[in-house]
Image: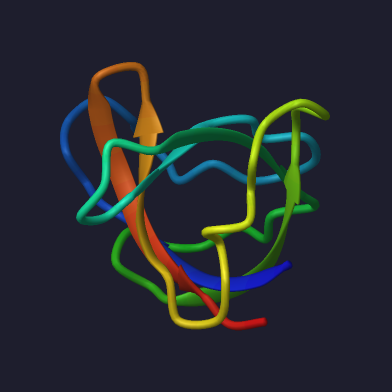
Amino acid sequence: MRAEVWFHKDGTRKDTPHGAAYRPHLHIKGTDEYLGVQFDNLVKSRFGEHIICNINPLYTGADYSKLTNGTLFEIKEGRNTVGEGFVME
């Protein structure tokens, strides 16, 4: 799926994630859903800069059906919310 994302400068990271195989969880806003995903070839960006990227499901048994066009999500690393975004397609 394609998504638009941006990362927060929250003190837990010195730089935004970039490169191959970044694997955070997505928390779907307004739900209790947390889904493991993989960002492929994430481009280097600045904090707060919006970027378009590809996100792939990580676990075969998980239900990713709520990640539809327009779905808002937070990007989580453990308890830390490091970014947010929305599904584009």
